[in-house]
Length: 432
Ligand code: DLL
Image 1 (cartoon, rainbow, N blue to C red):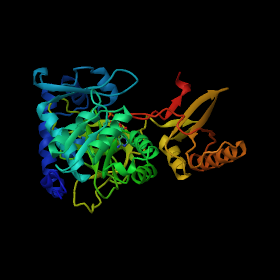
Image 2: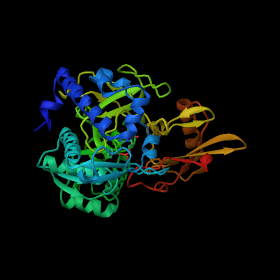
Image 3: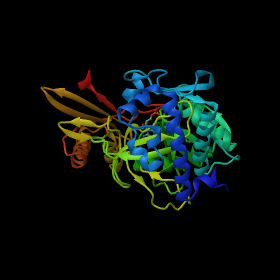
Image 4: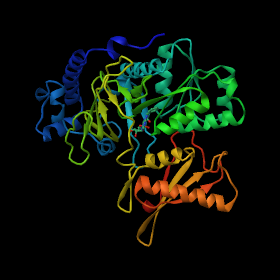
């Protein structure tokens, strides 16, 4: 079986990788300086010119870009190619402020597809596979990205898009899908529905490629068990290209960054200082091969760790851990930092599924936190005494994890709205 999509890149020596990065970075900085007046001004303000950037060691000299810069430049301010050379846009699902619009030349689309093809191959995909792409198609990058990768690998591609669960399951069974690509929350919902309908024996899935939102190891175990598959993580963001910025291999211990295209750094989110390998901080990417929308030192807000530890899959590409949340997803409740992923880990550890919602409010100038959690068909009870006891246990487990009191309300199975794309985990009424 083919293990790598582009073995010469995925298993390149560190020296070779560094040589590619040095050369591409120098070229990219020049391209941006010549074509993006907004970034050129930022460089001038920092006293840097393209001559100062001789390779990756000089990366730290460049100014950062943030989502605010993207908003300010909307829509064309960071475009580095004439519109006539662009063939596509994609956009974020962002709910606040202006959307981010990213542009692609055909060359950019081809490279993006290759990145996704690496991910599908790492999950065991070949031209014998039937790849069901159930990420949303359209402005969201999930569908188009995995669709392109699936074509490159030569899989029979089912461009399902998200939603219409009956049809998803019908195609999955009738056409014998072997690889499922969707958000982990939708995968969990599909798994639940398939098992409820007694269709587990009718599916041929062997692998899932799940990303676009944070998901815990417990959730991975759950989905793998329910569908009888191996579940691989995939990461990416619209600003940098979409899915396939990094992808998981069979070791399932973090995602290999396609660092021949995107150079990762970890910085201290407060000071901007670059942190050493292994330190936890904010992930920053520099895109060194994209033509139309090449962002340099883009701050993702994702909190993460990088590691060059040798991987048993043979890939030498640097690995990033599962993002531990976003610095802007972090809730500050009664002064304590709370990540939804911590709540989820507790729920799964206590035998619940990832069907929950966190409701934060402010009553009499004091923050309140309530976690609504669905009972599962296994632990469902209609005895008030039993429910109260289960709630008490969860309150205690959450207190241990978070250090603060959170009210817990158990609700009936299936009563929290399911998501076909990214799940809505937090309702923060304090902002309204
Ligand atoms: O979510 C791209 C994507 C599509 C990735 C399909 C994987 C699969 P955006 O909508 O721009 O792009 O959202 C990007 O989503 O900064 C992370 O906070 C989060 N995210 C993406 N993948 C993961 C993941 C797509 N595997 C933002 N784990 C990123 C945790 C993820 N968070």
